[in-house]
Amino acid sequence: MPTSLDTAYIGRFAPSPTGPLHFGSLLAAIASYLQARTANGQWLLRIEDIDPPREQAGADKLILDTLESYGFEWDGPVTYQSHFHEHHAASIAKLIASGVAYRCCCSRRDLARVARGPLGAIYPGTCRNGCESSNVAIRVRTHNDPVTFTDRLQGPQSMRLESESGDFVIRRRDGLVAYHLAVVQDDAEQGITEVVRGIDLLNTTPRHIHLQSLLDIPTPSYVHIPVAENAEGQKLSKLTGAAAISATRAGTTLVAALAALGQSTYKELCKESLQEIWAWALAHWQLSALERQENIAPQHYC
Ligand code: GLU
Image (cartoon, rainbow, N blue to C red; front, side, top):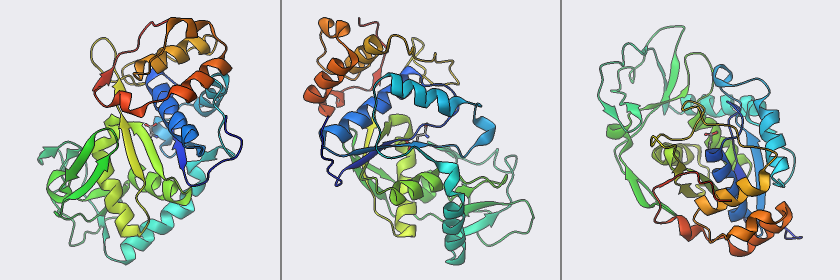
């Protein structure tokens, strides 16, 4: 473990407390951790608890305990996204005041028949010129100049937001801040320089870059890693019934995860202590091993 931290690199792992850590989220934790540590940088832990209806009581504690039993060491205190509600609300107010965000009265039913893109319904702009209701979402205006960025694993990306996503929600009708606004703002306030997360979020990144430009905040670099899939080819998630990772077999699960991340592990590593496994991982971490992988199947490696 490096002793002096280089503050130039700040990475993070930002799990939502919707359930215990599963193999797929472990891969994102490991990849973001090794990217930060091999850059001699900081690795922050942020619990994204902004969607109570989807959350599971106690999941934050389970996630933290599991990370600890796997030997992850984060910098500074764990932060909770819900503690930044006032900051999120201030940004939403700023976007409304400058005319780039507006009230939207459309219901789910109103949007059921509109065209769909990679991110769901493409909002047709129905309420762009105003609407009156006490029950509104807030949307941010988009345009059709391509939003482009180069993902460090997935290469050049481009999206025309207006035609491919439409104006998108930054505050939901139930009053909760949307993930897109919260993640962009918190990453900026925490000084995150590189975001490492699952490829399932690649399509949302143009929205994030659009918001960064409207809020005049920097764009970090992005690394979207392949997601772990089950035998049926479904992304491992709470929805597809992914099992919690074992806290008692941390060493062998860690080696299996490193193997799944394309690292050149070897069987004897399975017998080593957690400390030895991390030391090996730090000395041998190659992000580029993930370049040719589209998805990852959990392996019984050890
Ligand atoms: N909270 C998100 C999740 O658990 C990750 C968000 C991100 O890394 O940007 O899927």
